[in-house]
Length: 334
Image (cartoon, rainbow, N blue to C red; front, side, top):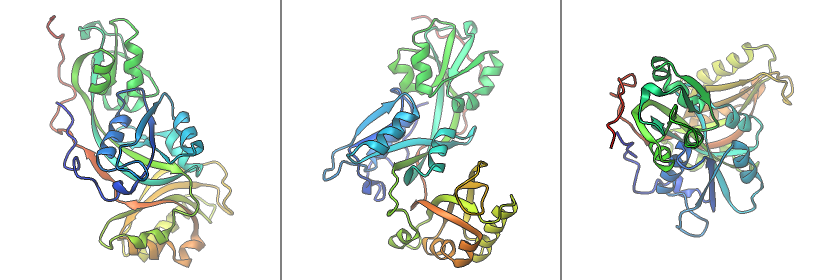
């Protein structure tokens, strides 16, 4: 069942169309879900500076390559990285990059994806191991257990497809259909699992760009996201974090929601804080501005803004009536 790009495909999205880059960097190799997300974002309007031409897309074998290019390339470049998924939660390396304050967040996009099980061979009963990124392994775990396969973890789903393309018929990968086709694999199970992944769009940190004042430029009725690093001034945890959230709820009349994405337990540079939270607040732009800039908020915590942008959009959609534990059988020999 092919993935649909959903209602956002086609006309440019005004916010996405405001993002300019000569090159977009993402995790690869060819056929990764990150590359698919980038292509959909380009369809929605990401373009080269001074032109409506599509930016170049460069895939990397590891996240370090994305970080290096985004931070050191002199031309306007951006990165698109998976941040979290429904099945497996946080993707540690991109979240650590945000915790380091290396990037300014330009936006987020949510993509529902379908994994396939692919192999050089055609007989599922002969498989011994299945390769994939830990997100793919989590989403397809039911098949792995039912078939008594040994899971092997890779840097990405397309890296898994590339790896088993060089192996024998006893190995499989959970990957995209595009990766299976690109590396000449047979699809044994379609779909093998479904998941929803949030991707973050980043550029090199611009200390003058992300601020609460940016919220004033948006329609008051547009749901906005504010992502930042939150360090409670009360060192006793979790009381410090809870006090911040109690204040946010009370001051906004419960109109602001927050997402605690990751807890960073090492000592921070923030005065009085020993824990640092990567959080995203969601609400009306005027309410977010008023509450998060309130002097009482500043007394409870230090908030370093990494980005202000509209609510994350859904890039694609999949059928939700799919059974991922369906019985699979060997395709007929052609």
